Length: 249
Image (cartoon, rainbow, N blue to C red; front, side):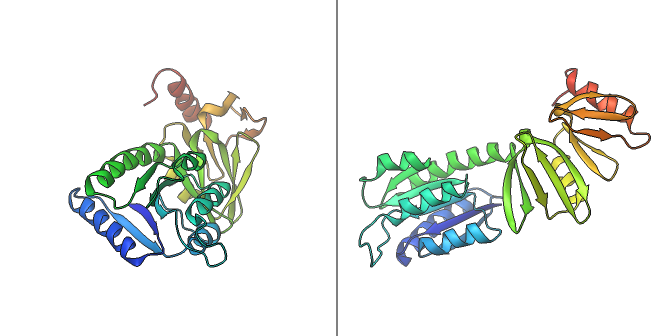
């Protein structure tokens, strides 16, 4: 499933884009788009900033009139705010002018498309965007923390520790994230990747960040030490050497 946001102050334009997306779905069996419409940038920014909404792809008009600032390109301003909020999804600008094409690079826009948008052009954009999204999904996971969804790079995760009803995720840059998820939910996300192993009920560790280990404890590259549960050493040692001896997938 792909979450897609459509942001345009003109209802007719929203309907046109939605129709093209629906046609693309029909030509790709098994593909599932979940669309949300936004007729102003404030609603989109609020939903992403305050709730658990993280679209994979945003189609946004640059020109959305504001009575206070006339033709100020609110779509471009919204894109800048999204990047400041650490939104890393795809942004595709739909506009009637090429005037802000160069500025689109400043917000890492995937595409800048001039209306009216043809089916062929939009389908090519979707082809490339979905390929990139799939590649990114292999590198990141979405985790619930403090009422928000946060995208975390897999290679940044050192280990996760159970702390009562919340779990603490330790990242290599020193950041600690309190997750509103169970250890089972977290491990279900991480178990697809060979580098992550679960130690008892309290820890999930990244084999790539284990500096050394013995029968009693492991020392992580961030300086932390984790005591091994009874009986865990043999299995962990086999996984550790398998990971580092050419058996990685």
